[in-house]
Length: 102
Image 1: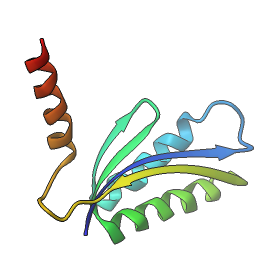
Image 2: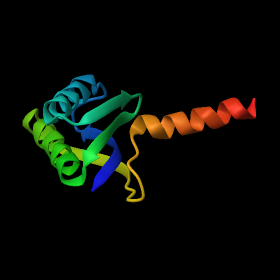
Image 3: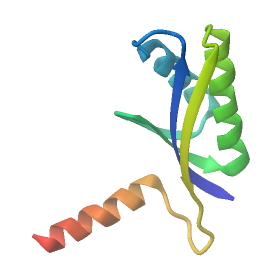
Image 4: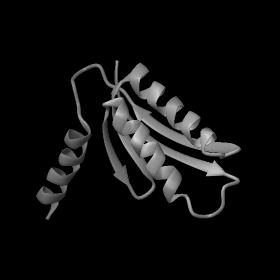
C-alpha cells in the first residue's frame, strides 16, 4: 500500500541546534531510495508503507547513534486505494483551485 507521510523527528537532550540531526535523517532517507521533500518543519516521504516505516525507524536509529538520548516524532500520513496519487498531485490540485479562485 502506498503512503504519503509527513515526518518531524526531534531529538531531545542534544541542545537547541538540530540541523546536524536533520541532515543525518535526510541522508538516511536519501539512502532509502524513497521520494522525499524537505520542508521547514519536517520531510514528506512517499512510497510503499513498509519501506517508509523502515526509513522512519532508520532515522531514529541514526539519531540515537549520534547521541540523542530521546526522540519525539510526529507523523501525519495518508493512504488511498482508489487511485495512485503523488505529493506533487496533491499540491497541484490545491494550486489549481487557488488559480480558479482569483
